[in-house]
Image (cartoon, rainbow, N blue to C red):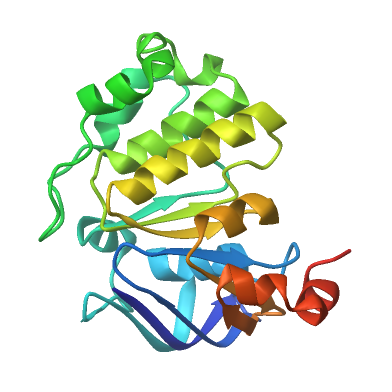
Length: 234
């Protein structure tokens, strides 16, 4: 579904990603792990079209994404949940969800609707008329994931969904991501909770200084002490 090939990404003159390669297959969950500041978020932003990619290729369902504006990429079926959440604080919960509604991408059924989302997450329905800015951090995170799901993406990229949240809320978020997995969408996930990512993911990448240093299954990662020691432990 997604084929990232030899991309070099920049912030101004700062060269962040170095000939990075990554793939996501249909209905696959891929985890992207690494220490802070090594290029995880930049990888997602490069795919979403919000960071300058000067060379390489990013193909989604065989179509080149490089050079396309972010809104075009979104309409092709690529959903993006940013680390900053970016809900609309002066809109209600339901209005935030309505902002995300769009026609399903080619070949994608309308699995996610507001009614279905409310049915699965009744605690959100109770907050439907609340202003987004009045929600807790965990509630905002559930809302921003839900807003992206309203577009019924084929691929949803999620950046640090549990950062700063209490353990019980983390469990709730990962249970939500399991529901997204069961819906048939592919997921590219960045999160520092390695245990949860390993449980959810089919494959893992580890990135260091803008380069992929490991690719494999969670079982292969678990057995590789050197990778965990050199690229993840503080």
